[in-house]
Image (cartoon, rainbow, N blue to C red; front, top):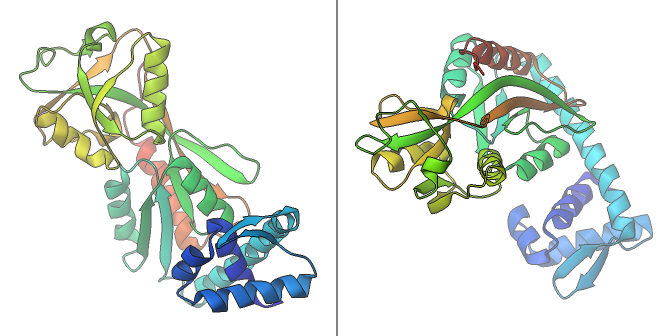
Length: 295
């Protein structure tokens, strides 16, 4: 059994499509198919049920997938540990975030301590972050809501109030607080369903008898306050994402507690370099320095 066979197997298992997996791996379809066939011959069992170019993991493949992921996970941890020992002042930290409001300030503070460390950052939804954590492909995730699983370490770093952003000149712009009743006839801009904050807001609103009407749904939370400023609609924006430079008024919500928990996540078995440990402390200290929610 070869390492390349395991890598190819994991990609095919992830995509369940020969053509797409071959594109992702930058190999020909025939080469990929032959590699998977040799792996199945080595193991003595088929790993996939085949329907044209579509593949589905069968019972054997599902069992082998967990072992293969674990094997490659451990090899990657060993590689990172050796890299840290040979060059502790350099390297790359890999992050996945579902909430990016505070990330620029956190990265700036860390770069002052470790200017040679590079970053790879992905904006993902919760399920995508979980997949990367389990495969050992990221050092940390910043997630809201928190994710609690047996092999995931979850550290709540901040309780963040969610505010209602309104443009200046709006009928509510001279207020400090607003009720859900007063928002029923408004249009909203927000991120798409599947983002933690959006799903949380929709759930709290529905339980209060209020269904937000969205005129815009996107994938970039950082753009929402600019859309509010342009008068496209109101928005629910966490306090850590407030942009004081924009001409927007932020109101607290009456009646119901509208907050989100921000969590720092890492895999319990993942090797954390010295730089990664320092980054974790920077994140914890940064959020500890922010004003706490008074409810």
